[in-house]
Image 1: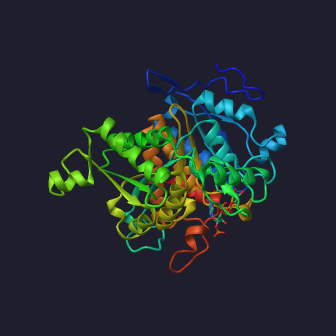
Image 2: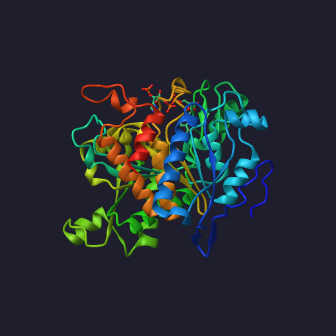
Image 3: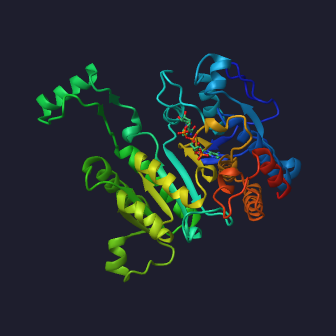
Length: 416
Ligand code: NAP
């Protein structure tokens, strides 16, 4: 039985997920901490929890179930703890190793840049993973959305997201501008704000390792490095070089570069190998629209990944349909990729699919394949039958009203 974590009392009939010699051990009733989230969070979490529980029950009856533990962040944490991100929440995610969260408001003037970024950094969740796949029946602005079947691995802890920046006119900015001029001979306008873009060997290599491990275990045949190394040589360009080093040094038997493909294999990828290639970020935005079938796994730096994943997701139904997860070495946090959509708060109008599909990723992580597949099938059936929320319904031809969040969840559960 797990002990209390500060003010949190874990369910007494649940068990902790453990790692033994690099292998995840999942009990029959794992304790899973969840953050309901702000704005539309309560609406979409209610729907998601119902779907996940029913899917697990359908797949395993009484032999498996989830013991939920509510933990707090955002507005609810401010009410309960008078803090935006209590230490109890961080400790619970560390102890129980897999959790799920709804969207969180970024507090204005709360001392946090973003609660999401803070959570990723304090838990060292270094790989943000976003699968982008088309579900039949979802309205799309492109002609052939079913060609989109990608998974994006975005470095999650560094780059311009590291939060190292100084406002124009601040002492910090002035000191740095002076340092750059005097010590390094670089001129920056005095009325500039300054941001730092750190990209490390450690951060780049561990991200690439995760992307390649995924490609190997899932039988994917290409991994594309997306970077802007032609301009930012020692950050973006170095990311590319270090990622290629991982492919060569740690996955040499399984990978082939584009140069080797043409020099040694006449352009035909040998059976069982993974093609590792790279694309410059701006060109890649074109590629994912014009030749999406040529990209299966993408590994990229933080800012590129942020932009690219939303652009890819636009082809398959938009933010309401996009799942995501943040992985560290022995910890995972699954989350809706969109924000709190404040204008829909409490209106029962938001699409819960992003959080439901993030729940599918969580079930896959637990190895509960049957339950995950059950949800995927039910999602496809529900949408095929025209069961969609307003974000998708309004894009259909002709546009229609769409289901409320809870009506969508009811229809979904009938299809499980
Ligand atoms: P947002 O909350 O993602 O919403 C932008 C728009 O996307 C909404 O107005 C809505 O579009 C659509 N949308 C997003 N999720 C939807 C859903 N589930 N169902 C239907 N439509 C959905 O972005 P934002 O307005 O820029 O940010 C609001 C707050 O969320 C901010 O405080 C921000 O910091 C925070 N945020 C949190 C996260 C996170 O927790 N991971 C991520 C991003 C932003 P229409 O208006 O066209 O209907």
